Amino acid sequence: MPRSVLAAQGRFDVRHFGATGDGVAIDSPAFNAAIAEAARVGGTVVVPKGRYLCFSIRLRSRIRLLFDHGATIIAADPALHGGSYDPPESASGLYQDFGHSHWRNSLIWGEDVEEVTIEGPGLIDGQGLTRDGPGARWQAQTGERPLSMQGMSAREIGLLEPAIAAMDGKGNKAIALKRGRNIRLSGFTISKGGHFAILATGTRGLVIEDLTIDTDRDGIDLDCVQDTLVRGCKVNSPNDDGIVVKSSLALGEPIAAQNVVIRDCAVSGYDRGTLIDGTRTRTQKFAPDRDRVTGRIKLGTESNGGYRNVKVQDCSFTHCRGLALETVDGGMMENIVATRLTMRDVTTAPLFVRLGDRRRGPDGTGIGGVREVLVSEIDARGIDPRFPAAFAGLAGRPIESLVMRDVYLLYGEAGAAPGSPPQAAENVAELAGTYPEPSMFGVLPAWALWARHVERLTVDTFHAETLLHEARRPIRLENVAFPAFSNTPLYQNGD
Image (cartoon, rainbow, N blue to C red; front, top):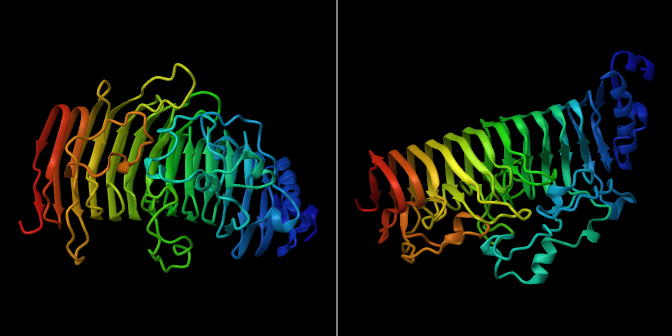
């Protein structure tokens, strides 16, 4: 069909702009030409069945990128394919790492775009992307990296966090969105998405639905977003977080992430690639931070602007860390609801709420706060016995109000050989400025629930069991001003 006829129909086939789809020729110029034409009339860019080897694809407003069945966009490798990704912006990355601070060095990127859709049953194969990138230039030894990385040599850290010069020409995200409004991502699969399979920063009116992501670092990062819905997504990310809400300083000012809903999603830490191929194997035991595999839903770590009105509901966690709600960089975390969550094979704490004092930000950055957090209808089993549900504020800045209701926790694996129960010190260090992770405090002096520096803690219908003969008490509260407990049966093996 002539290009003029297609244009009249508002449909622009990338093959008619020179794309070959043979997996050998570089097809990104054809994609960008088709997108430019479609943007003039608000049209659809059609990606037929084929294998399209690409460097940076630049989104424009009022376009729809439509994958046909069998369509694959392959991220080219600069070392192999004689080209490069768009250069990263000149942003400083002072208070967040290189990946959070840049968007254009991506396979698909859009800046200030509106009314954009990417959809269809296609595949984005990020085989030519890198998962690595420099860390933030801000340094505070205990707050920049998890304590689990303390034993790593400078060379080992350098392999994960190369110098900026090493990023020349490389792409480290599958899809990156900076600001923008009314964007929908639907129905496709991302394999090996680089540092971020999806990074959305300062975006409003964002819908991400029915995606399958099987990746080597972060899955979906929602940074300073507003009015955002993530639903029906499957995200496998053994080496980093699955679905994350953040509020960094990447846009130069603290902006709250607010009005965010994550629902009907499944996160996991299976061996990479085995969600897509269906085998779902679990041979990998540790993430690059030397803690156990990740793959969770989290708020944080970047938290300068805070979070308001965030709901996580009807989601499952499998072979990964549990739910983590963290603010450590001066932002307020308030009106957070996590409900109807199922967890199996939990590699650290099932529930972790942390108000910390890292303050990664400019002079004058203060301490944030936590209020109005509800965690309810949680069923978590096969939990690492070292890590109870843990809620930790600060001595001079407690968590203001937290409710845990209708929670069932089972520690240890049924049928596993009995082991020795974990041993814990009675006095737990404050670690106010430390990078927040459930493992940061070591083995805690309670096996079911540990809470410290909480003003109002309400626990209603909390049922916990352990398959070990525990010497630790089930619950320990430290500096909890107004605790209220009702219906809390606690059992250990032999009871």
